[in-house]
Length: 64
View 1 (cartoon, rainbow, N blue to C red):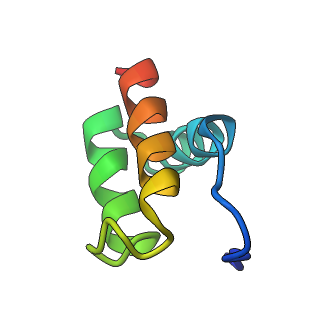
View 2: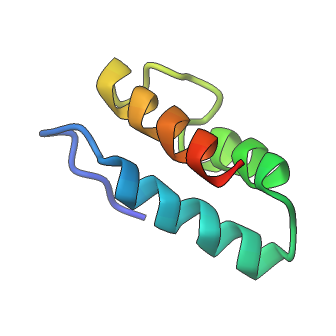
């Protein structure tokens, strides 16, 4: 996946991303969060800035 570093990604983006992981892997939202942390953020919460990670966290909370 190509990500433009020009701006923060929104909560809706991460809701869709987490749902895609859950559907593709038939897993829970907790498992999807771990997969996203590994594959999207490469284990670094600040990889795309704090605003993007905050939106990721908000999406996770909404799906939990």
